[in-house]
Image 1 (cartoon, rainbow, N blue to C red):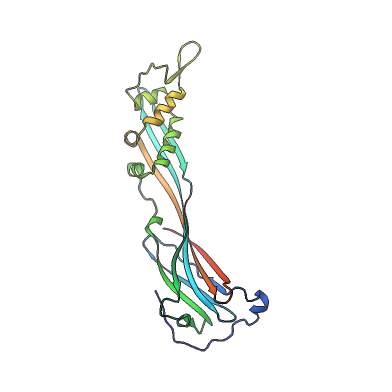
Image 2: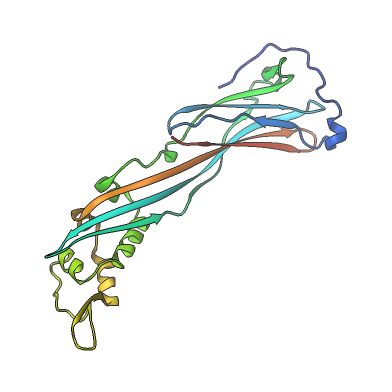
Length: 252
């Protein structure tokens, strides 16, 4: 969104900046955006100026990350025991690399169109629509199991496989022979210990699909922590020197 202002005579703000910085970069400050939901419009506001009044462009970018913490609970009723199993899985951060939003002045405009007398500086406003890929995961229970990506689901299954015993496995997979020596460990006297062999654990990993998990699902939840970093970059004409300002806000 372009906002125009009446052209006014500009003062020389902080004339000693050249001595302090060597006039290498301009001054640039991006205001803190409010927290917002995906699809919302956030107004980005940056203020910038340079000693020689030679700013060429002001550009906006966004980047972000998404961190999801899953908790899945299964409830298995065997012949004589109810088992409550819980696993937690923290998904690796899903990163969005720095992505261009917009650059000012827009075609056919001058940076002077954005000068504000009270600020004694250029004030650039841009309405940024929060991209939908930043949307929080709100599904729960079986819906969450179904929309998990394969990598997350496989990690959850692998953690559950280490919690299964003989009674649980034969309940979830009734086709399994409860006296199998391939899947179940025995002690030195030939009695079943209740523990699974490596082949038994691998069978669970290979065969516990989403539908089977849902059959015994008690609860599935996820805490979604998503942050976006907005950035403004003011670049000089003469030497290409640039000043960047970043602000991070939370996705609701």
